[in-house]
Image 1 (cartoon, rainbow, N blue to C red):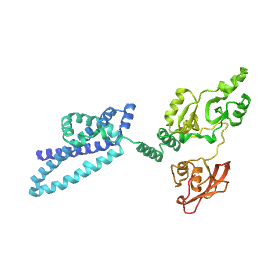
Image 2: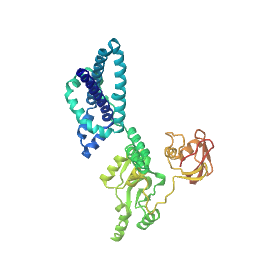
Image 3: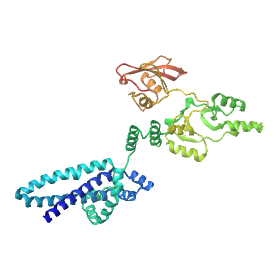
Image 4: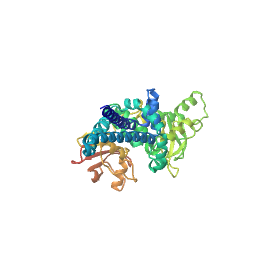
Length: 423
């Protein structure tokens, strides 16, 4: 009788140990290395053990597998011995079915469901025990790592612990759960894409840049500054491609106040900073900071002037448009009627697709909506009203406004059956 009670007690203990290791596996593996570091910074009890285990995930997994396997085998052995004593030859089959059911429900399913629901608190509770066991099992872990190439070989080629796409998915999950607001999501996405953005993608193109020649007088320069509202303007000599400096409006006023009669704008402008259009904007921001300038002149592979980038342009990639008293806020997409929209011709095709949920074709031969129209027409538009049919996207692009040969505004007419764009 005492022996039966002892065997039943040992069986229950083995099932509990199986449940412990099964739940530990779910709780500890669900905790990421980043989360473990956060718990350590918060000073949570057990966090140091969690962090130590996450530094060696192979050791963690082997420790749990050893404990779980020993507990399951012991439970099966005890149950089989008791069943044979009680039922004879039929005991093996009865024990097999009984142990399988008990371990499945109480040793696997129920503990793992509990651990999944309270992974953080449970992981902090059991981590010191698992860490202690990993030290006890260290000889076995060492042997397994040497025998099995799965654990011991190929660590150099292991995938990164977290990828940019996974971070974006977590941001999306946070937005859906309400822990991250829409504005925060957009800023986090901007941070992730910041290092991949080039100067060409954010520059003010050459055709939109206000320039002045180095022969203008101070009065003429002040007039240009007043008309544009800019505080810095690139200066060229003879031809636009020959940018020789950047003029700051403060230098003009300083020279006039000190009454330097012989001074020209060539004397008060500072040397321009030239960067290639392929320059990453995170590196560009560092260079602008080092040189203590607010504007960079962007050049192409032939050293031709193609645009400018300011510190404000770079910051706007992170925080969105920064409006000042001279800026006129206009929506990127203006809705005229159902299925009819107006956009800036300089808007990038990819950005418009993302904004409106369209499928406009993307090509290396153009970047903007205006470029797409020219590509489809095969020539520069001669007058407003010319249209380009984009059959694959089920819409029509119509030139609405032009300045010289430059397209300013484009009307988008969405044909029925294309779905409803979301401006």
